[in-house]
Image (cartoon, one colour):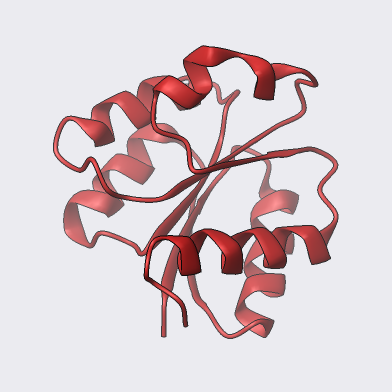
Length: 124
């Protein structure tokens, strides 16, 4: 069973994503801050990271930069309410595998997770 770490400072998003992805057959853990996510990844690297951009303790790209120091291959789906950010070269240069804009359709979430995992040779 593939492990997905969802990182978002909004508790309702964490619960919604965790429920949907668990129902889709994934093992899901969550983190409410960038620091918490980094600690969890240090203990156990997930197969996929779903990462919010705007969080109170660390910007999502800062979290990703710290991850990339030791793990260049972890697939990352970036989530944000900022429309148009997907055209920002910085996001793609940071090593993002895919991008979703909030509010996120849950069917799109599951599809994008499956697509990224398959692309990276990590299907269920």
